[in-house]
Image (spheres, rainbow, N blue to C red):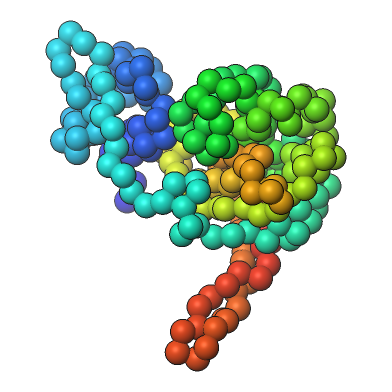
Length: 260
């Protein structure tokens, strides 16, 4: 049984709030009605649920304000995140590049927001390259990728290079010696922008990947936000047990991905 429409809108807006998308306030009810193609009562019910959870503050005659979300878990630099095997990751990206096509949606030099600055260990307002791309297989769109790279590195490549090569390859060609990565994989519901680019319905489930790449000197060189269609992309990880018999833990040995 599908989720009620108001609950789908609530889930999409909640995820966007947690990402800091509404620092200047949420869109008005009319804008949300147009975005989700629903009646005002549906939008209001979704907003009421967000307000009940303390995520937004609604004041008559004023723009709906986002409230700071509660702290949850470690951030991009937290030690609890999994390390990715970059050798396998690079090989996987090269293989994917040979079997897929990429469309560059946008490339621009912007000032680092609070989240981007913290992830890349920059000062608020420092210049970074933001690149948005959609990768597709012969069946259709596969992933929507947004990357942030410090301008001191990214000035060596632009739209043309990003349309031809994986960004990790471009980083290495720019002299970056890739060291390690922290990565998280979670679920995400498609908003109207992701739905349009990935050819899915608003509220569809997606795989969400966040990956922070460091060079060999432990400096962050790239922050990636990726959203993948789960019907066309499978993420696989091989695990091994290590440690003494009374304190064994699972450690990843290899990373691979399959796409249809």
